[in-house]
Length: 202
Image (cartoon, rainbow, N blue to C red):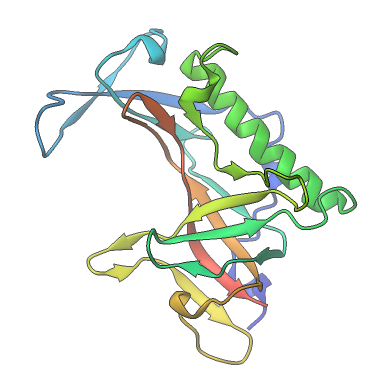
């Protein structure tokens, strides 16, 4: 099976210069272990809402799905926190990778603007782009593998063989369908995790 038949093949350019839709949900009682949320209309700036639970994010009524370019997973699957780290390989010379990186970056900046963050409190937003402190390596995108009902909620295919997300090893080459749907407020900070729906191992 080719990646074209398995993945959604939604190019990241679909979201260039497109206004995103945000919907705020507040927590009815933040002390409850099982929290309930309700929609909050109006133009109140999210960072001023003490009991903000999360912000739903979409393009109109459509969820934000992107099919990644071919990327390297330098550390394999991290079983401790169920994440994949996807490298923006050759970001300075590969125009496709560079435009994908800029799109992810712009989506995060748009979220920060909507939340109402400024240069003084921008550190309250937890970016999913990770940079090497020494600047030796290309940046990475952190992607969450959903885990529901005691199993990983992800569809994975390999060329000519069966595979499991737990068997993804260092420097695997992948193309993935990834998505975002919510910006969560957690311990006073804001986080919008990319999640993976499908993985094609090259």
